[in-house]
Length: 117
Length: 144
Image (cartoon, rainbow over all chains, first blue to last red; front, side, top):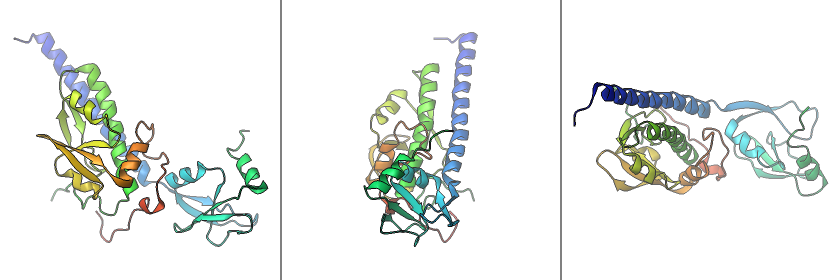
């Protein structure tokens, strides 16, 4: 069946729009992959010593994962206080500690998420 | 010489988490292409971007929308340009072979990550639950 000029133009326009959508997605992919790569950032040590100003380098996805559990804290290795917390991870350049389920843990959990001001 | 994509060298050292995450990022892009193509010309094959684990791969293959929809029925299923399954570093098995693409199932921790990120609005950064040893990229002696 012969395709009319108008039908052909419409088809070509649809094709072009689909390809443009693909290119938009390729650009979005580049941005998404860049966000995976550019993830390491510095945070401060979350130990109990108020005079500690140590910093930890951590990937943002890791940070987000730890933050999903309000009883977990990120510390410089060696800054743990084993009388009030348990080390659950320690082989990534920082330690992840969990507060036991007593009063300090409840206090910790109750401060996250941080109340908006 | 042109850089090869979709090979085992192109993703050497990537963690299982990163393999699964890369797939999920490609899947999200293809879902948007699918939505657009379905609205524009649902009876025509649409150009989709290879869903291998190599973030630099941008190979496009035309796939009928019905076939694409079948792949999307499984949260661990992806399509690759033939041969690009090697970029999954062993975390993928070919389960179907077509003329221009293969369907793979992601296995192990990479499969877990891909499944957890199905439907995620931000598969690049959304947290996943996976063992620590599968989250660390291995340092490379040479740039890949």
